[in-house]
Length: 392
Image (cartoon, rainbow, N blue to C red; front, side, top):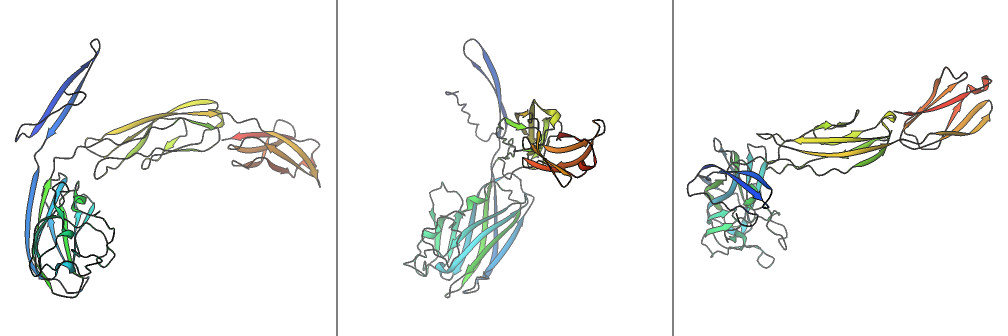
């Protein structure tokens, strides 16, 4: 152990699990912990396919060839190299990409060639004839980008390069465009699926022939399920009768991301959380005020084993002010009055002529205050009593 870091280098050719236990002490008190390390060797898959098909000249239709890879380990991709053997033609005319429709449901895409050598000053691009190259996704290997590979007139370009990666139309303006779609885009995906190579000769001139192509796919160690990340949730103060929503959405760091499910471990009556997006909702009733209510929300992923995260927060519910009635006006035998109070709750107006039997004459949901109500039956009675109730 160096400082707070644990250094571990597995023995050569070791595959398996190592478990380390450790003790931390300040000389008086101590704590123990345990770390499990899974060591797995990388798997390299090599495939080559003969094609021997020409590319239509000056056509964006191009040539697409596909291969299905199956039965391989589902360990995530850690690197992809593409071998291209193309003869004839004029390299500055060619555009190509690699596409994976993975068995894990994802789609990965990388631009391999995009008018090699083409600039404002050299509009036709590189004059080399053909490629016998390996395009790599290893950005740390020190390879030159294939776009900067200037070949010799009439001779093929050879060697190892990074894929072009510039996701722009082959007839577009290349000035200032950087490589954002290299082969590193495939990292993390399941290599099982349909791999498609597309090539097109997009300018008039010599024709090219795709003789063969191949893939070298490196698979890393098995992915380890990581727990979802649920941000801290702040405490809330709300008035009874008001609507509260809290966005408790979590993120999953796994690639591809797991499916997340949300639930409430502790919550006041009437509260709910959307099980798929984590949206918490509650409208506290008047009888639930004043109060302080703990909420414990958990999110669980669909990994094996399933992992989760939990956050808690408190909701303080205040009691609305007692509503007031005033501003009585009698016009043409109809009595009107104005109600003032806090905004949020529902307001229901009850009327009675004997203080025993009460009849609802108006219900309004979270009205804008103040508001006016009219009692058309008031002119037929000698006396009239009113009661305002808040809800829900």
